Length: 109
Length: 113
Image (cartoon, chains in turn cyan, purple):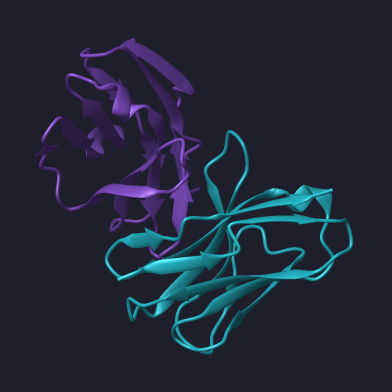
């Protein structure tokens, strides 16, 4: 039972490049979330999806897009990466509590 | 405004000492949930506890205990007889009525042998 799986675990991008962070869950939860964690800070919500087919902006959505492909998968896309997007990204699902993936450490140079 | 404050940026204690991590929250909601998560050096987020706003009973789980006081809007976390493996960053979080998690900045706990 993997829970929440994020890929890749590490990524280095050049400014202006695009990439998609993948998240898949096998917990059959409706709600999924993307957070970013910067040094010395708690997590900040980028986007969330309350159910398949719906997505909503969180606290820091600028520069990102998301797709809730199906109930299992929720991807986060950076269309034109910027150094300010260097961060650790966490995907999560929610039922009664929140279950987090292991994170993607992204560096934009 | 919804807010979680963890005033202690870093705490360092010697192994076997007791240590308390403070969490103060602000919310307009009457129904809300509070969480504690542990983030060890490996980086994953480990769920520790969830407490709803109607349940003010203190909770004890092994060496961990939590003190929830609505009167002071606090949800403090105590580790008894700390161990080196407890070294981590600990986050307190508030889930609001829109099901969004608002996180504190975290407290880095260092347990010295």
